[in-house]
Length: 240
Image (cartoon, rainbow, N blue to C red):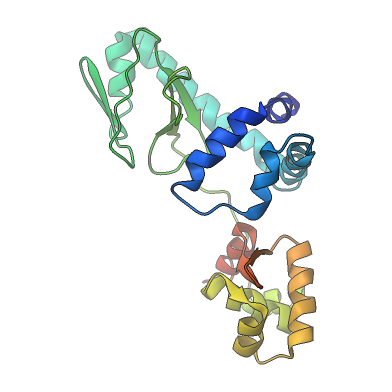
């Protein structure tokens, strides 16, 4: 993990600016991302620190499971390569990809041609890649295909609705449910949805945000709130 974070910290500013620009063409980016490529900014170090905290809090308890699942996939692909060569290895990627020599057809979200030009292709199994493989956006970088490994989601203990209310309090549980039902609500929207005074809702959203269950971002003169993946998982766990 430390080596990966060192790579994040060492990312060249010009590359960050170029790739963030590419990403912004397809989706709006949070305003804080603009500081990542700014000369003299410590935003990249702050991002690396946030990733480290996130990993320690949420991923470390499951990391041995993730490594085992990815290791099993590597073993499976290695056996296929040793027993049947490249043909067997690429055939084993079905239905995510189909080998029709000399072309590897991939179930990719957009139409795109990537020419290897003798550079080879690095296959990267990923626990956190879902549904479809993905590749690097920059065709000048070494060709990489990241594909999802077969896995089940992390086990989440069942939480009763009453248990959630006892954990968060009735007001916070109602606010979390409100922002989960419809993303990008203003504080006033949330107050109207749950029937609480605006100052109380503002305070409770701050508590939920500090706990990682709600994320807020500014859009013009408004601050919009949405449930985080952790908040959604907590609510999903209350379903029978």
